[in-house]
Length: 238
Image 1 (spheres, rainbow, N blue to C red):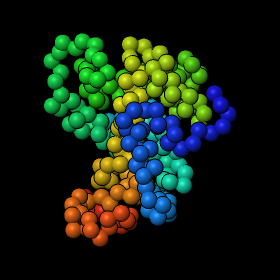
Image 2: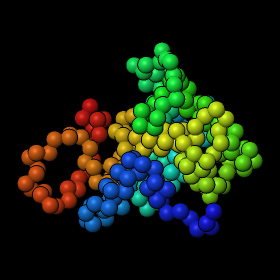
Image 3: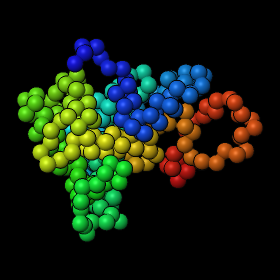
Image 4: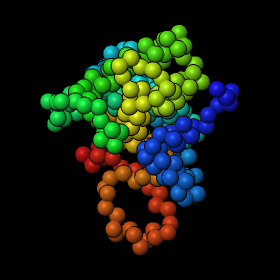
C-alpha cells in the first residue's frame, strides 16, 4: 500500500451512506462554525470502566479499530478517547445486544444486502464471532492479532474487510466491517449519556447543538447564518 498516511476520515468516504453523511456534513459547514469547532477542547481522560460484554481480547480489537477509523487529529481525540469503545461495550451488554425484539426463529436463508441483517446471531454474538474471525485472519495474514498491527497495517486490514477481500472462516468480512463502522459512528455522534461522544466532540465537530431539538423560535434570527452554541445533552437537562 502507499507509504503516505491516509488523511483522517477519508477512509470512511467509500463506506456507504454513513460515510457519505459525514463527508456531506463537513463540506457544508460554515467557515465560522468550522473554525469554532476546531477549537473544541480535547475529551477529558476517563478512568477505565469495567467491561460489560467484551472480553479483554475483544476490547483490544475494538479500541484498535475505532482508533483507526477515527484517529486523533485537530478535529477530535481518537475514537477510544471519545468513548466509542465504551459505547460499543455498553450497547452489546444491553437488551439490543442480546437480541431483544429481533426475530430469531428462522429459517435463516442467505439474504441480499438490501434486506439487512439476516443472521440467527444476536448483535453481541455477531461481534464476538466477527472479532474472532478478524483476529484469526489477521494472524494468518500478518502474524499478529489486529490490535498488534502497525497503523498502516490496520488501515490495510480494514480496507480488505470493507471490500470483502479478507477471507473470514464462515463469516462475511464485508458485513462485519459495515456493522463495525456503523456502531462506531453511532458512538461518535450519540448523546454522551450512552458512553460515546465524550465531551460532545462529535457534536462540536459538525456544529450540532444537541438537545433540545426544537429551534423554531430561532429560525428567523439565524437564517443563512451559523448557529454556534455550547451543545447540550440529555444529562444537561437532568
